[in-house]
Image (tube, rainbow, N blue to C red):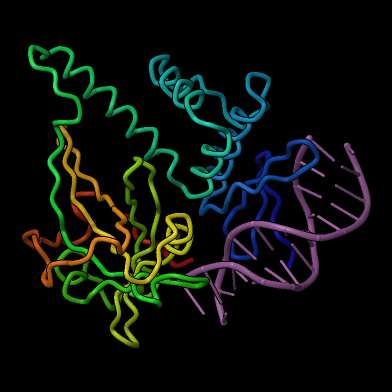
Amino acid sequence: MKLPSSRYRGVVAQQSGKWGAQIYKKNERIWLGTFCTEVEAAQTYDLAARCLHETNAVTNFSTCSKSDKVAKAELNFLRSHTTDDILSMLRRHTYDEELNRTRDMHQIQHLQCNNATTFMPNKSEDRELLFFKLISHGDVGQHSRLLIPRKHAQKHFPVFQKSSGVDHKGVMINCEDEEGRIWRFRYAHWSSCNNHVLNGGWTQFAKEKCLRPGDEVQFWRVTNEVGDVRLCIECHTSKAATFPSQSPLELPLSQPDKMIRLFGVNVYVLHNK
DNA sequence: CTCTGTGTTGAC
DNA sequence: TCAACACAGAGG
């Protein structure tokens, strides 16, 4: 069957029914990822085009709809990152989150400056350790998944509804590392073995962090001054000799019906096609 | 198994 | 420089 052509520049149809975004630079194609909608793919192409070709970029949409202030903030954001960083964010669908995060940081700095008889940098965040996991052999390597101990998964992670198919597909969660970089993992429940796992971007994360069996990853719930809550992940190498045998802190469990929020952070249900 | 992203080619 | 198409192999 013939695949449909896209109305948009840099967008190609995929057999799965999704849309791919790609851009060319110096006779080479740069793949920008796959997206559920054609428009999303086109917007991604636009960002990459502005990034790679600077001002003379030919794009699908104009930026006129955005207010000057927002457009300027975004331009600063683009300028303060390398092209590779931006392309990586686009591929991993974390661009908006990263952009919003830096906006929040500026807002906080602004607040601090205005109140500032006592200016205390980095003193404003409320951090709470949710749980940690000792890395096993199955958690690292070529096709690895992070197995989440059932106790912690049931306590802190969203409950899957068996009828909805969410069970199999999982949900995407964004997780911030020590450097403020945002990673996107898929959280899924494998009903066949009743295991709860993180996969998706996990393999790449484990690879880049050079995680090895015996290392530890910690999951934190961090609330900033403006009240935004986000999920953070920290890696600790196995040099530290001893670990407590029980999970230190736990959050009260609350599961809203429809909207899935994890640690106060929005997570996105993956739709079947 | 599904489906992304690469290899490749021909058009513009 | 670009999209169309096939499909290897990455990944769920």
